[in-house]
Amino acid sequence: MAKRRIVLIGYRGSGKSSVGMALSRLTGQNFLDTDQLIEEAAGKKIPQIFEAEGEAGFRELEQHVIARIPSGAGIVSTGGGAVIHLDNVRLLRMNSIIVFLNSSPEVIYKRIHKTNRPSLTGLSPRDEIKQVLNERMPLYRSAADIVIDTSTTTSEEAASLILNILKNGIFNKEKRIGLLSSVMKTDIPQGEKMLLKKLSGVHDIFLYGILGYPCMHSKSPVIYNRLFADYAMPAHYTWFEHKNPKEFFASLPGTGVRGLSVTIPHKETVIPFLDEVKHDAQSIGAVNTVLIQDDRKFGFNTDWKGIYRPLEGAEGDVAVILGAGGAAAAAVYAVSMRGFTPVILNRTPDRAKNLARKTGAETGAINDIGKYRPDLLINATPVGMGSDPNTPVPISSLKPGMKVFDLVYTPRDTPLLQAALAAGCFVIPGTEMFIHQLAEQFRILTGIDTPVLRIREMFA
Image (cartoon, rainbow, N blue to C red; front, side, top):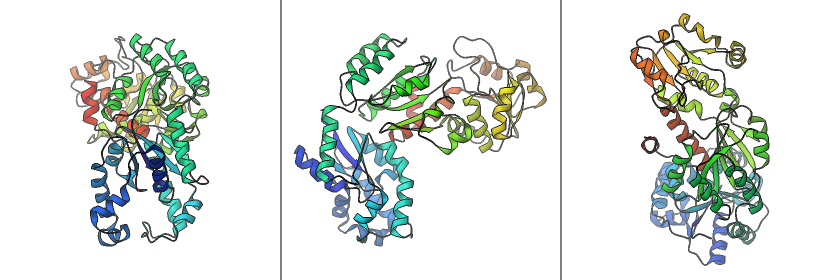
């Protein structure tokens, strides 16, 4: 087993301190409790810190303490709200395995209701536990590598479970070999095949990847693996090129796959195979991010944020979206959030109408673009990808002052963007959408808020 820190996260009362001490006894490694370190630094007990400085003052102290914890091997127990600040998660992730200790709200109540910690919400203790646990659950899920239910286990039992997982592997070896054997039959680079063959026998490396057909054009593996190296994460990202998402998801349990990016044509078809889909992804009707934890699959859509954020400051009334697939649905959602009136134009008008029924947008054929005089044009079709020399609309429809956003990012300067520049339009390359959506996706899949500048630097 690699000498990594074991970091325990979870709500107060989930057993982090007692499990941490049990792990320390079993391994002989040092144990640090961030709450204890905070009290030592402040010279006060935590209730006194809250009374004097409020939650904001406590969180500031917590950040200072976490920033000073060595990244070498050891056992670290964190406060229940440590994950609120993503800088904490980034620091705790370094060279660590993150273990989420999860207990039911009722068990937590029984364990902590007699303590003198101040209320965070003003609600009754039971209601506060339910509300705060519900708010923090997505953060715990994103940050955690392993989940242990401590509702009925003793501290020693939970510690033994953790060590057993770390010793014997986070996956079933036969199932991982089966998955990676199928991946190695696809057209991945030879160097990647050699690396995956090696990873078949490495027991503590989590897998991530991009699911699509085709998906070999994706630059996500290169960027993700560099980010994993930045944060010393025990993880590897590869290409999962597969025609059938149902078959693919059926092959995942026990393989140690923790997260997926989803691309064409699976953004809509994966939804029936997920256990929970976030509300914005439900509204859009497409998923491009899947977090996997304890074989439960959680679906998200970060595409719309990848479109929304580069449009900051954009003004106008009408936004024409070309296409009617998952990326187009995300674009409709994003421009609506920016105050534009969306119009969906597609080569097949019936598909545009199907999308419009969910959004109330006007629809038409692509050749209708001239009558809408859009302030913003977004290409959500694959036209112009790779060596395709075509533009999705007639060049004559591009007018000076129009903002043109091409979601295709390979190549960066697509035929549409070249024509738009020549016509006097303002342009946004698809690399911006890719960078912003990947930053949000990385946060969901790892709990780390990585700088957009770092991703842009790697993409260049």
